[in-house]
Length: 88
Image (cartoon, rainbow, N blue to C red; front, side):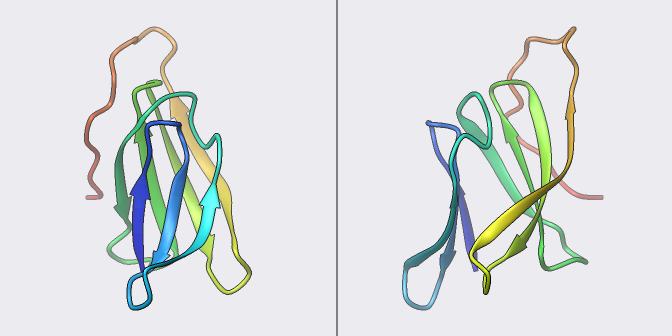
């Protein structure tokens, strides 16, 4: 699977072998998604970060065709974009 983020705040999960979109989450963020990262130890978990200043963690269910928001973090005191994220 391949994940991509968009300027409209949505992200898409793609079947890499067929190049078909499996899941698209519209309005996942209020701004451009700048970073999308798969969790290295939990294959169904994905993090997204946006210019809206938030980081969100999702569980992806490709066979069912949807994604579930499981965690989010936004510091309202900071107005900076988040350009990159990584798991540690």
